[in-house]
Length: 245
Image (tube, rainbow, N blue to C red):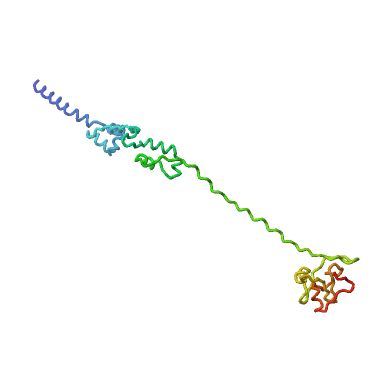
C-alpha cells in the first residue's frame, strides 16, 4: 500500500515539473505583454511587429526576444590633408602652395578671370607663370564739348531822322493803308525798296506827300509810304510849305 502511494506521489511531482515551465510561459497577462512591447516600442516598430501581434504571440509563449539595435558608428572626421613638400625631382608645387599664391594675388587673378581651382590645377602641373600686377589702366579722357555761344542779337536798324524844320514837332509814324503798287504800310518796307531814295508819306486823298520830320509825316488819314521817285507816276506832289530834306 505504501509503495502505491509513493508511486502516485512521484507521478504527481513529475507532472508538476513538466507543466510548470509551460504554465509560466503561457501565464503572462495581456497587460504584461503590452508593457513589454511598449518598453521596446521603437525596436518592434523597426522590425514591423505591431503591438497586437506581439501580445498574441507573447500570451502564446512565442513572442520573439528583442535585440537592441546596433549603435551607430561614430562620426569620425577625416584627418586634415597633409601638405606635401614639393617634389625635389620634378619641382612640382603642392596644392597648398599654389592656393596661397592665388590668394596672395586674388584681385589680379579675378580681374583676369582665373579661378582658384583652375590656377591650382595649372600650378601643380607647372604651367602657370607667376603673375605680375601691372599698373592700373589710365582712365579714358573725357572730352567735354562746350556749348556754342548764344547767337548775337540781330542789329536793329536805326532810322535816320531828319532835323524837323523850325517850329515843327516830330511824331512817330503810323501804319499806312496802301491801295496801289509802290505804296507801303510801314516806313521800313518803303526804305527796303527805295534804295537810297527819299521815303515820303502820301495823303491818298489829297495826293500830297510829306517829308520825314514834318507834322503830317505818317499822321494823315488814308495814307501810305512811297519812294519819292514813284510819286509823279501816280500824280502825287510835294507839300508846298515843306522843305526837301
